[in-house]
Image (cartoon, rainbow, N blue to C red; front, side, top):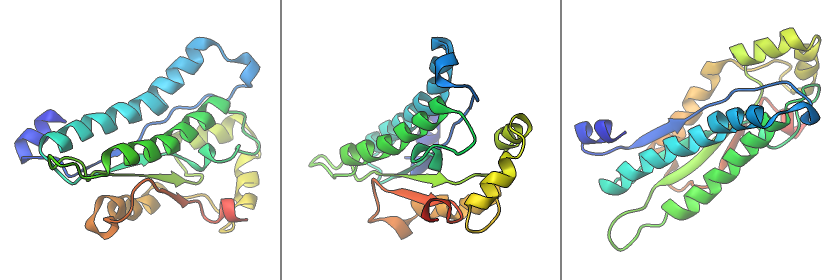
Amino acid sequence: MAEIAQEHGGLDGVIAAAGIQKILPAVDYRASDVSEMLAVNYTGVMMTATAAARQMIKYKSRGSICLIASISGMEANKGLISPVYNSSKAAVIQLARNLAMEWSPIKKDGTGGIRVNCISPGHILTPMVRKNFEEVPGLKEDWEKEIMMGRLAETQEFKSAALFLLSNASTYMTGSNLVIDGGHSSW
């Protein structure tokens, strides 16, 4: 981040996305399983955001940070036992609110003004999700029934939302969680 900011005279935005998952009942988790997932899903996102914020503060940039959470952080995924993944994504949603509260106000020294928001996508056809379908027969069809649009998302369907959060089109938006789930949570 420091090299990028130095090369460009500041940093305008960053998208922090990370996620690994393990399908396992809570009683079967070991501390090492939990630590690994939290290290990627939460700590990785937090460290990316703080590295970007350090540069935005240093260069007095009015930047934007977009964290990628999940609808899994707001509800349990029916048919998929993944309590650590789900709770790590809930932590990312709360992290966005807290970082927004800390970094959004403009301070007397000219620092601040950093917007922090997150996107909570619904079920996306990623390699991780495709693996879930192999491990849990019928899961894809069950999830499609739970979504108003009757289908899962493709990765490209989230690019414009991320660009919106990074752009000047969202300058009065911070601490928000943009839910894009094909109507899953509204159903």
